Image (cartoon, rainbow, N blue to C red; front, side, top):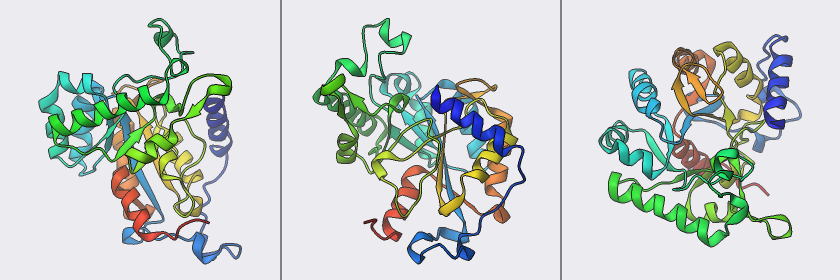
Length: 280
């Protein structure tokens, strides 16, 4: 809730201000290594990501993305994919990326829906979680022919255990994937500094287009890579992106004069790895 409150505070402040397009090339304090160049002269990279393999992603989001020739990244779990396997095969055939979102979708047991099942990340260890993640990658490979390169932490939680026994599972994700994306973050990814196992994810659920646009413009400093994260697509909601807002967002991001490179997480991740200097 703290992150949501902070994000809403940021929006309330930035909506009252004129948009300022920072030019990193003219900033005298910028060092040459701080400037990053994306394809086609873009100032920033953007990835549209969707979690949980929800039905509305197949029925609403994918047709919108396909209509505009845009590829998204879908972080999925085996059970919901299995229910509409042929449709998810079409998603892969259309060029969209499928990433790993675990099999069990464990978050902190502070969530009532998990606590009701007697489950939570507080109750498992790294070995259990690794098996859960590997099962999902195996499913994607055998059923969809996909070798998952990207991972999204369910609920943005990156730990197992309690108290002095808490352990991060970020190293586990670094071992198995090219990237791992978190959730409800407050800033975007600096390509010259970011940790690929902890890419930040910015909420796009429940937001109007003007709010999204203002937020994105506020995150553009340092040629950042902005990863937007949503769940359902249809009507606006706490965990849903409005379909019309998604269309407006894509128009805005694809407009050449706005200077965005819109691609999947794996494509952008690979490009940055190939073109950046290693941070000290």
